[in-house]
Length: 452
Image (tube, rainbow, N blue to C red):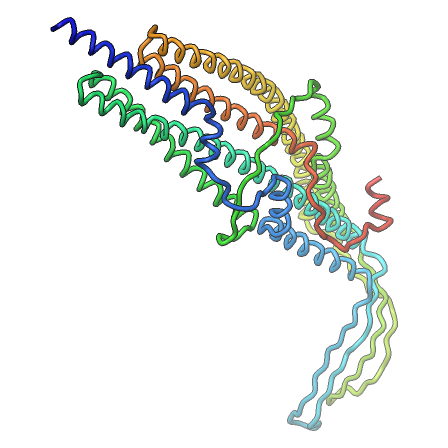
C-alpha cells in the first residue's frame, strides 16, 4: 500500500515537472513576441531625426539665445551711429520782469567727429566680436539641445525595452505561480518552491513598475522638449544596428577643432578684450570735431543772431594715472582670458579622449553581454530538456530562466549606454543643427582685415 502510494506520488510529481517544463517552453519560445504584445505602439512613430528637428524648430533655449543675439546686434548698430554727425538744439523763451519783458535763447547746430583717437572704431569692432560670440553660443545651444534629445530618446527606448522584458516575465511567472500554489496546496510540491517563485514574482513586478514609471517620465520630458502636446499620440522608433567606434582618436579631435564653436569663441573673447584696451588707449588723444552752429539770444544786455563754424576739441591731458591703471588692468584681463580659454580647450579635448576610450570599452561590453546572452539561452534550452527527461528539478529551470532574463536586460542596458556615449562623442563632430535665421549684420571690410 505504501509502495503504491509512493509510486503514485512519484508519477504525479514527474507529471507536474513535465507540465511545468512544457508550459515554460511554450511561454518562453519568443519573449520578444510576448513583449511586443504586452506593449503596443501608442501612436505615430517619431524617429530620432524628427525629434531633433522638432526640438530645434520651437525651443525656448534657442529663442533665448536668439534674443541675446538680437540685443547685441542692436548695440552693434548703435556703435555705427557714432561715425555720423550729431544734430543738437537747445532753446528757451519766456516772460520776465525788468526792462525787457520777453527773453529768448536758441542754440542749434551740427557736429561731425573727425578724430577720437580710434575710440569709435575700437568700440565698433569690439561689439562686432561680441555679436560673433553670441552666434557661436547659439550654435552651442543647438548642439547641446540636440544632444539632450538624443540622450532622452535613447533612455526612453531603454526603459521601453526593459518594460517589455519585465512584462513578459510577470506574465509567465504569474501563470506558474498559480499552478505551483495549487500543487503546493495538494502537497505535491513543497511550500519552499511556492515561496521562492512568489518572491521572485514580486521582484519582477517591482522591476516592471520601476521601468514603466521611468519610461512614462522620460516620454513626458521628451514630449515637452520636442514640443508634442499631451493629446497627440507618440511612439518611439527602434534603433537599427549598433555602430562601431572609429579606431582613430585624432579624427574626432581634428573634426572638433574644425567645427566646434568652443575654439572660435575663445579667439573672439580675446579679441573683444583687446578692443576694450584700444578704446581706453584712445582716451589719451584729443577729440576733435567740426561744428556748425546758429546762435540767437534776446536779453537785456544781449541781442545776437549769428552763425558759428569751427573746430571743437577736448583733451584729458593728465588724470594722475587713472587711465593708465585701467589700461594695465585690461592687459591683465586679456592675459587671464587667454589662459582661461587655453584651460577650457584642454579640458574639452580631455573630455573627448575620455568619451572615446569609454565608448570603445562599452562596445566591448556589448559583445560580452551578447556572449552571455547566447550562453544563457543555450543553458535554458538544456535545463528544459533535462527537466523533460527527469534529470533536473524545477528550481534549476527557474534559475536558468532568471539568468536568461537578466542577460537580456543587461544587453539592452549596455546598448543604451553605448548609444548615449556615442551621442556625447559625436556632438563634437557630426551633429548638423538645422539652419536658424539668426542675423542680418554683415561683416564689413575692416572687420575682415582685422580678423586676418
